[in-house]
Image 1 (tube, rainbow, N blue to C red):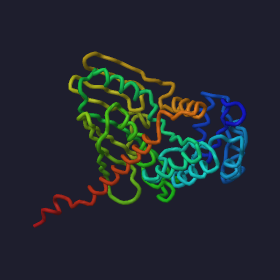
Image 2 (image 1 turned 60 degrees about the vertical axis):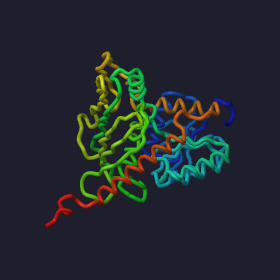
Image 3 (image 1 turned 90 degrees about the vertical axis):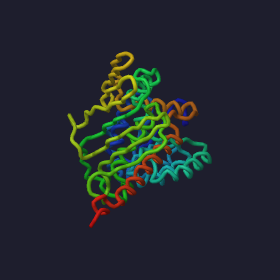
Image 4 (image 1 turned 30 degrees about the horizontal axis):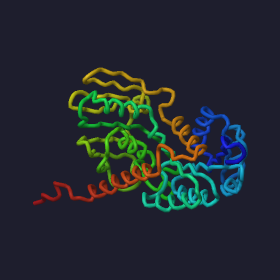
Length: 335
C-alpha cells in the first residue's frame, strides 16, 4: 500500500453503472478509500471523478495501472475484457477486483492464479451474492434442522430486464443471461448450505441467440434437489419481488428471493428479516475485500469458489445444448 498501510487507492477501469453502484457502497462503508476513475475517454472519467468526489481521473486504463497512488484496480468493463485487464493489472503490480462473470472460461483461472502468485498480489471476484444476509439465515436454519432434512429447493429469480447495451452483443458479453446475471444465482444455489454435485440446464423457448432465461436443476450431496428459475423475460411483482421455498422432511422455509424476509415453519416457527440495510451483500463484500487487502489475507469468497461457480454455469450451458439437440418424442415416433 502507498503511505499509511490502512490507506487504499482503488481505480475503476470503466465508468458505467457498476462503477457508480460500487462507488456508493465504498463511500458508505469507508470514506478513507481513495477512488480513481479510468475510461477510454478522459472527459467521461473526469465527469465521473467530479460527480463522485474522486481522487483523480485517467483517460486510459494504462494510465491507472502506471500510477503509484493506485494500489488496486476494479475491472468494471464488459466481460470480454475481464481476463486481459486482470492479467495486465497483476503485471503492473496491482491487486485486482474483477466484476462477475470474472473470465470467459473456468479454465482461465489457472493463468490468473499463476499471475497472482508471481506478482504477490490478490485477485478478488466481486460476487456480492455470496455475502447476502439471507444466505446466512438459510444456512443457519438448515444447520439447526428446523425443517428436518432438506429435500427440494425452489428458487425464483424471475424479472424483466431491458438491456440494449453490450449485454446484447455476444462478442462483448461472452454469454447470455445465465452467464452475466444468472451466475449470481448459481452462487446462491451453491452456498445455501448444501454441496452441489451436478447441475443440468434447460433452455425454454426457441434455440439460437443469447439466452435470456434458463431453468437449472441441481443435485446436492445431501440428497436434495434444487431448481433455479432464472429469467430476464418474466414479469414479477414490483419488477423483482419473488417467493422461493426450501422443503424439508419436517417443514419448509419460505423466503423472498432478494432477502426481505424468511419464514420457517417446522420443528419451530422462525420469522427473520435478514438485513434490509445490505440486501445485496455488497457492503459485506467490500468490507471483506478491504480487510483482505489491508491484512494480506484471503477473502471469504476465494478464487476457488469463483471458479466453481463458473464451472457450474458452463455445465448448465453444456447440458442445455445437449437437451435442445435431442429429437422430440413426436418426431421420433413418426409413421
